[in-house]
Amino acid sequence: MPSGAMVMHSGIEDSGDAVLDRHAQARLFVEAVALDRKASRGNMPGRRFRAGAMNYITPAGLARLQAELHRLLRVERPQVVETVAWAAGNGDRSENGDYIYGKKRLREIDRRARFLAKRIELAAIVDPAQQRDRSQVFFGATVRYARADGSQNTVMIVGVDEIDDGTGRISWVSPIARALRAARDGDEVTVRTPAGVERLEIIEIRYPDAVPSAERKSP
Image (cartoon, rainbow, N blue to C red):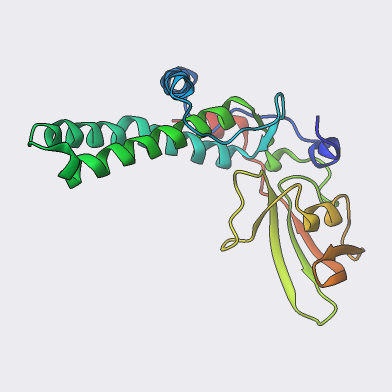
């Protein structure tokens, strides 16, 4: 387990709710693995991860990865294959833009599908709504903090596959997340930035409301 994972994970139970059903997930994974083996034989490049590294992720984050994998393999790839097959029957392939672009897009889809399948395989679901100790900053917390100049920022600490600068989602291994870890309302923490050491004051810590199990399982 990565250093610090126990702290971010403290008090939370893993949950498999709100994700694709296991049979659908298994089918998508098998397809992506087949693509991975094909790519390996062709020495296609791909992003690699440290063997055994866990991918801590929220249920919503995992659902987004699964939805993207499903869209790529069930919707976009069949459409591109059809276009490539049509283009291949239209004469000289070397000057056929539809064929050339289609083959390029297929390689991109297959590479992304392999990446998603590996990340889903390594996923360790951590549901922030199940956090028992809501007075401290752990994985899944939304934190509002103030800088020395009086400006305020709000961030949500999530998995590395969920980061989004536009919505304030930051990775749990980022410098700011590490600095905020286990802090409480009113605490001051320091974070090292390219501009130097910065002090942050914790203004607010919140977590999503827990959803009753009966409601989570309802259709």
